[in-house]
Each structure stands twice: as structure tokens, then as C-alpha cells.
Image (cartoon, rainbow, N blue to C red):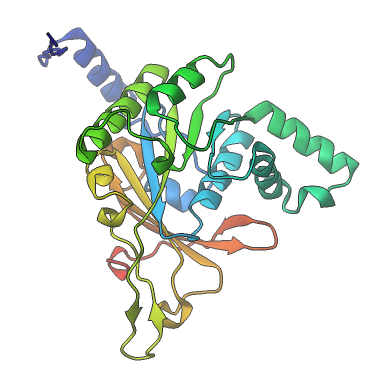
Length: 298
């Protein structure tokens, strides 16, 4: 017989009081690790013990954004574990990271640059390779826990590559997976980026320009339904606006923070949007130093 494992708290429990007194002593909420983009950090930071779903339409730059953040944080000393079964190979992932760090293709690095990149990637990144199909959360978790390495954050690219454990209805499987991710983050005090894509987005026709475009995606349009959004703690959309419709700059990318469950992660406000520019030649996102109005994309 299955027994519910639960704990009842009261306000005066020592664990609760100690944490509240600690917060009051330091006078301000404890935000997380910097992401490398000052304006974004006013809205969201990656806090150990939590997770974030990064979603968007295909080819919107989700993985590139997360990899840029990972490189920025690695420069500050954080260590990353990457599970990317959608990529061709671990070498492909390392080449992407090297490109972001150095600003040019790995093959174009001279000997000195190559040694610098090698040392950086060796010290801050590990890539976990698994079969492309048939990986459940239990297998993935067991594999990670069996690694004899230290890490501060994990990237799962992408969420839909984690297969259901059972033949339960989809909503129950999503609930189980998100519960497992939440427990894993808390137990190991790591941050997990969960990359997800949307279902086939609907195109619209702008009434003025008659130009066909894909609008920003609602979180409920994530692949396999809105359950991911309802159960996750933090949610960010990556969106490349259409220049003719939104009068945006070439290479402009919107980072729309759609959900923040813990308001302590942001330094200034709990939700919003920023604008980044994507440098194709260097494979890097750079800050445009201006925060977009939230109603511009709502």
C-alpha cells in the first residue's frame, strides 16, 4: 500500500524561522547567478535548486541563447553538464561552445587560441552522451548520479527527448517528470535549463504590409500542451521578431520572461522582456541596452 510522504509546517518551525530571519538580516532577497546580460538579470537569474523552461518556435535561437548564458557563467566559475541528444555528437556541442567563447570557428583558431579554448572547456563543461531514443528520467537520473564530476548547472536539450516512464496519460507523465526535476534540483542544489519547442506555429498576415509572419508564442503552445508551463517554476520564451512587422533591428531577439515563481530571482522586477542582438559572425548574443515594453509582444 502506497503511503503519502508529507510534512506539516508551522510558522514557528526552526527551519522556517531560520530562513526568514536570514532573509531579514541581509535586508534583501537572495538572487541567483548572473547570466551575463545586465538587463536580463534585473528580471531573472539562475538560482541553485531551481529550473527554467526555455521555449520557442523552431530555429528561434533557444539552444544558442542557453549556450551563451552557459559560457558567460562559466567565465564566472560555474561548471556545466550538458545532455543534448538532439545534437549530432558531443564534438558538435563542444564546437558550438568553442565558437561562442572564441567568436570564431574552432578550425580557425591558432595554437594559442586553441589551447585557451581547450583549457576553458575542459575546466567548465562536460557532455553526457546517451542513446537518442529510449531514455527515461530514471535512466537519465541514474546516469547523472553515477558520474564522478562536480557541476553547478545542467542543460537538457530538449525536454521532449525524455521519454515517459509508463503508459499513464500524458498529463500524469508530465506531472511526474516535473516533480522529479524539482526534487533533483533541490536535492543537488543545481540549476537546470529545460529546452522545449512549440507545436507548429500559426502564421498571420499583417494588415498593413500583408507580410506573413509568426507572432510570439504563448506558453500553452509548447509541444505536448500547457502542462509544462503550469508546472514549471520559471519560463522564458526566445523570439525572433519579423523586421517588417515589428520594425525591429536585424538580428534582434526578444527574451520574454513569461513566468517567475520565486520573485527573489530577479533583482528589480519579477517579469518582463529584454532585447538582445545576435551576432552571426561570432555566434554570440550581445545586449542592446534597452528593455522592451511588456505589452509590445502580449
